[in-house]
Amino acid sequence: MVALFVAQLETPTRRLISAVVLIAGGTAMASYGEVNMNLLGLIFMFSSEAFEAIRLVMTQMLLVGHKFHPSARLVARAAHNHGRISFYGQGQERMLVR
Image (cartoon, rainbow, N blue to C red; front, top):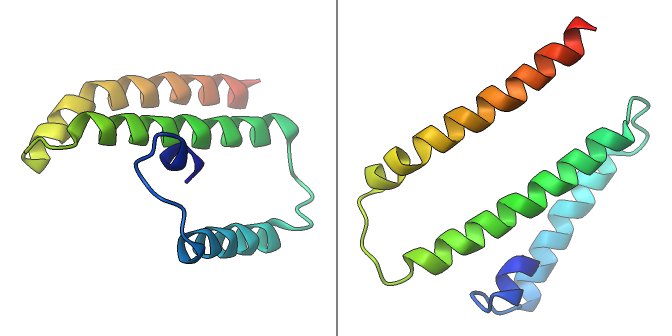
């Protein structure tokens, strides 16, 4: 939401902000008291969310005013997603082997 506001692709409204706060509050309540929380995992999760938000904003900025078939976007992203999943999957495998 913040990335959309900064890029001026969305205007902050009371309804939008309250919806996001409600979702964040529900997530915080659901995870309260988690005994197996790992700081490194939390950092990875927050950075993943931030980079995903930036990616979505950049995609929206690039595609504004263009007409694309939905399958064209899937084909363009397939190689990138395969590489990213393979890279992180190998990292997880190494962590499990130790």
